[in-house]
Image (cartoon, rainbow, N blue to C red; front, side, top):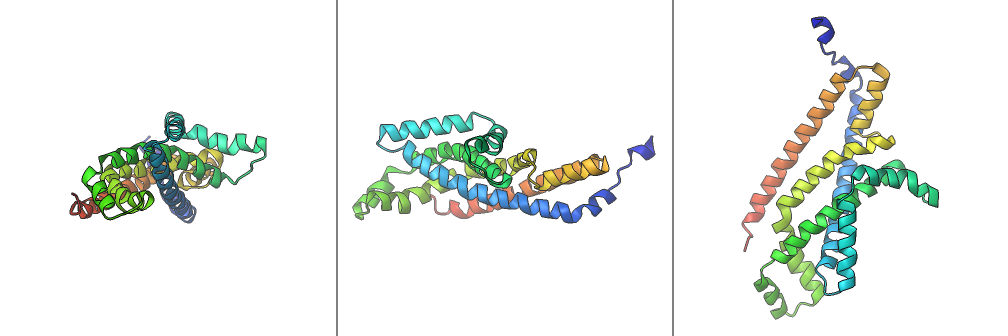
Length: 223
């Protein structure tokens, strides 16, 4: 029984090149997801705080729909349902786009709260300098809102990183997808799941450390 319970990590060593490539795919999806979700978040938050009722309603509907439905459903829809209406995209594109929309919807509410927390004095100072609405938003409001929202945005980034594991459900070979392929071939799962679990855990610790450093650096500019 003890012999049967022993773990054989030679499986992991043999699969190391494929796992490394899968980790790179995970990193690429995370980077694209971060950039895309920030763009969605800033644009959606601008609409959520605009003077146009139609814009606020549209942004609110988008936010409520995507953040209140599972990301896996969006991934399946983008990959399996869109081809039915003639939209065919590679699995990695479909999955990344779905994650961008889901995490972007969450980012909208985070950044909206940050926009509303920018001190009124900063807006008055921008007006006194003669900045137009767009310049004020881009140069004064957004940088401060992002600094205020950074802790919550950091949590959203970590959530995005962990949710990349869902892309394996449609055959994308991220690190989880590679591990599942190896498990199917070798019929041994514990070693692979322990390995990718350690990968996600250490990566989240690294993300958290970087975010804490950035927060401490930006804290000196707090008003």
